[in-house]
Every structure is written in structure tokens, then in C-alpha cells.
Image 1 (cartoon, one colour):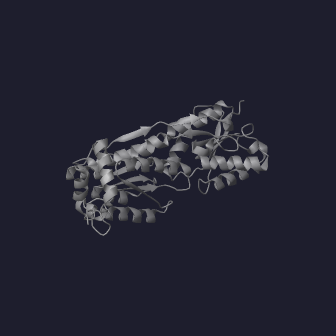
Image 2 (cartoon, rainbow, N blue to C red):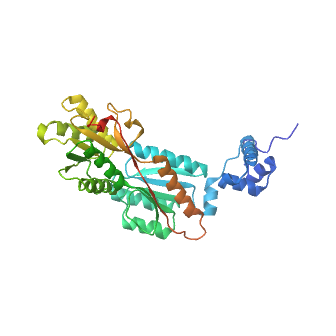
Image 3 (cartoon, one colour):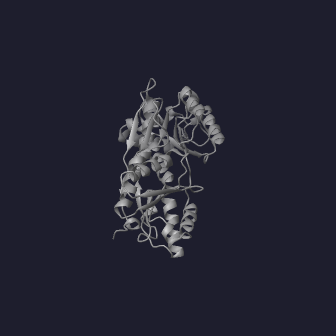
Amino acid sequence: MASPPAGRKHDVVSMKDVAGHASVALGTVSKYLNTPQRVSPEMQARIRAAIAELGYTRNEAARQLKSGRSRTIALVALELNNPFFGEVAEAMERRATEDDLFLSIVSASGDAEREAAYVGLLVQQRVYGVILASGQTKNAELDLLHSSGIPTVLMDAYPDTDRFSSCSIDDVAGSRQAVSHLVQQGCRRIAFVGGETKTHQIAQRLRGAQSAIEDFSGVQMEIIATDDRSVMSGIAAGDSIARRREDDRPDGVFAANDSLAIGMIESFVRTGTIAVPHDIAIVGYDDVDFAAASAIPLSSVRRPRVEFGRSAVDLVSDQARALARPATRRMVIQPELIVRHSSLRAS
């Protein structure tokens, strides 16, 4: 009777077994598992076939113990109920997979103590890298990440620093585009909805809006704060505006994100007392996938989410592969105003 193959279920299959079965060098298998882009397509196909035939499973715990670092990139997000972050995370995950990395997502939802605990845990686990996108990480946690030597990228949420690489979108420029467009559509009483200025991203959008207002005479802006930046908060803000006297209402709204803007449109359509864009023109921010599918197609400032997510992962990988502490890099991506029916008041 023929001997069973080396990969029978009760055997522990090693990288050496895979190399022999694929007729390649052991180093080529290692390279395939760690940096597959450095292995030719023909070699990749042979190694994949050998892994499948033998039932090889990588011992990630042993690999991490040897290298002193896991294969996980951790994203510390500001909020998980904003579709924009989901779309960015999807782009990150796809880019990470190309380098045989894994993406893990946590969010403290503004709880500083919980975020500090998360950062401490990530340091203990010796993650491959950290992408901070909450905008609220305290200096003590930033100091810990820096001193621990964990590749860390600040994403769209922090003031300039030479200690970390950063990837951001120019929210000041994007907000200026949005408010200038509303003024050009004839709006003179503009409301900025979602003004939670303790969050860096929102503070930048408000700063850009106020800067645009200063360029025009006879234009006023009020700030309408919301509990959060959800659709339900947008509905509540819309209901509140609808209860005002007609001469006390804004004629243009710049919402801090699309969820708020879509909630306000829902409120106005439901009550039927305010016509969009004739009575109130609305511009959102992020240009999430369903902005164009809103009851009234939403004008929005588009943030290039695929480029944004992939760039952040690349910055982490650049640091992780450097033999010494690398020079930090700062990437700034420009947004673009996408005009749809919700803001075309002049027409």
C-alpha cells in the first residue's frame, strides 16, 4: 500500500514540506507568506497549490513570537455609524490584504478613557501598526505609541506634528467650496449644522465655512449643534428649523456630514413645509454612496475614500519596513464639491 501524503490531516505540515511539494526553495515559501508581491506569479501558483494539497496552516502565534510583531493593523475610528468610515475601512482592508496584513477596527465613540485602554492593549499586543482617526487621542497615548516604536499614522484628525506620519483631507478647502457654492446660489442666511467643535474634523469644516463667509458681504452664518452626526440628529435639526418663523429660517444649510444632511431632507420632505432647494439649499460632506440616492439628490463635498484608506495603510507599511526610524511623511488629499439638485436654488 502506498504511503499517505505528507499532508494527511493528523500530521503537522511545515513550510519545509510545502517547499518540497512545490519544488521551490524554503526561502521562497517564506517570502510568499510575508511579501507575496515579491514572488513571481508562476511561483505563487505552485506554492498556493502545495498549501491547498497539504493542508498547511500558518502558525501565526509562533511567527509573531519570532518577529516580535503581529500582522494586524488597528484602526482607531471616530465613529462607526458614519458610512464614510465604513467605506474607508473597506479600502484599508483591501490594501492590507495585498500585503498579507489584517485590519482590526475599534472605536471609543468619544470616550477618552476607553480609547486610552484600547491604545494600551494595542501596544501590549505589538500590532504591526496603528491608524488613529478619532481625533481625540490624548498626548499620553501618543507618547506611548511613539516610545514603543509602533508604526503610527494620524489620519485626518490631528494638528501637524513631526513625530508621526499623517494622511488628511483638506477639510478647510472643502468647506470653503461648499459655503461659496451656497452663496453663489443666492443664500444669505447659512446654517452650519453639526457644530461639535471639540472634534478636530468638525472644527476644520467650521473654520473653512467661516472663512468663506468672510469673503462675502451681507451673508450671515449660525451654528446649530447636534447630539451626534447621525440621520436621526439631522431629522431633529430639520424639525427644529421647520418650527421657526419663515423669516427666521436659514436659506442655506451646510451639514457637517451626509447623514445629517439626509436627515434634514427627510424632515423637510415629511413635513412638507420647506421645499429643497427652493426654500433651503443643502450641501453635505463626505459624498457617501447613498448621497446621490437621497429623496432629493444631495450635493456633497467628496472625500476620496479609496485613496484615503490605501494611503494610510501604505504609510504604516513604509514605517514598518524601515530598518531605522523613518522620516515622517505628511499627505494632504484635496476634496471636490459634487453638485446635485439639493443645492441648486438658483435654478
